[in-house]
Image 1 (cartoon, rainbow, N blue to C red):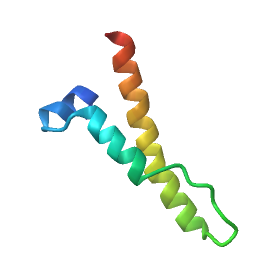
Image 2 (image 1 turned 135 degrees about the vertical axis):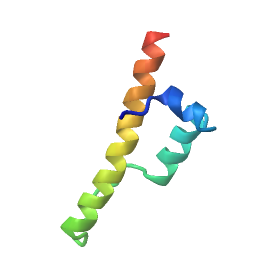
Image 3 (image 1 turned 90 degrees about the vertical axis):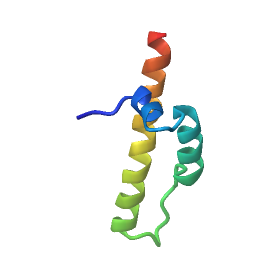
Image 4 (image 1 turned 120 degrees about the horizontal axis):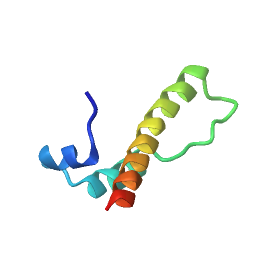
Length: 64
């Protein structure tokens, strides 16, 4: 099952507001030598969700 940006609105969330919140909560982070590989991978996973949502929103905008 996939969730489209329009489905977010069905769940009572405006997609752009969610994107703005996610961008500020999970910003791109440059790893430091002190970071463990686990921490780097965890943050990368968080950010990949943000990037996926951005892509879906851009695709929806292009279709309109």
